[in-house]
Image (tube, rainbow, N blue to C red):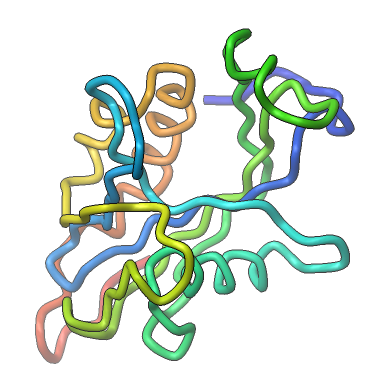
Length: 171
């Protein structure tokens, strides 16, 4: 699926993280102070000025869920940017000129244990977390981000196979 062309200057540069467990599930966190039924999402965050997308992804991983870069393997980066529009009520509340976000998504393999996830290492963005099947994530996210999650689920499907001892996952 190819997204339509967007004026990049109107979309905040951002990264999204599909953190895969050894069992092939992805990390989802429940947004603090979220309203409504769709408050689970994969980690994401802005790219700082002068920062590469992969550096931003690894920084956001540490900031949002407390997992250091040494506990993950970067499996894949989307070659293009995926976009979503902010809904009108959200646009009114957010500072800046942006219509939405453009995201580079990363598939990461988690090499740590569940106890290495520390939502309280920095200012918490999530109040709970769990492992979920990648193909269920579009049903967990707020509707305006759903098309991006559907695209991510399709592109990263190959990373959902469990990693068995002695078996090298195929990418």
